[in-house]
Amino acid sequence: MRSTARLLTTRPAKADPTPGDPACGRAPFELPYSLAIPDDEHSRWRLHLGLLNSSTRLTEDLSAAGETGALLDELTLVDAAARAVVESLLNP
Figure 1: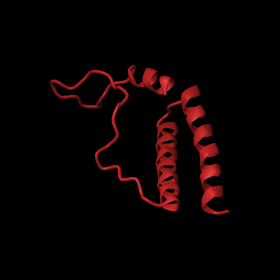
Figure 2: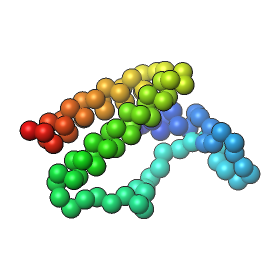
Figure 3: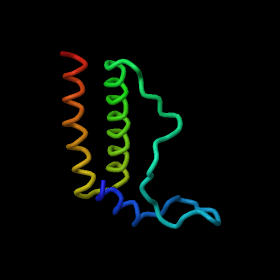
Figure 4: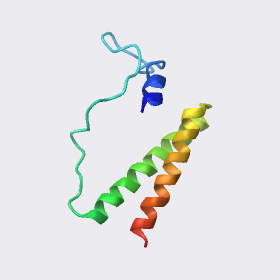
């Protein structure tokens, strides 16, 4: 988390900022209001897998756009390891 926050604060918050927008990105400290966590365990793991899939798409997009670095590499490895665990729980 620290590495991500450090990286965000060195990047512009928006490609086309409007007056009053923050100059640099920052880490959010709240969950989205739309986040609904399922009641049953299987559905919670499916949600987790969906979030990992979204993260993978984002890291692939960043790589395709020319982004490189240890943080991106680490996120890719951590997501792959988490995916293996979640998939083993969903498909015993």
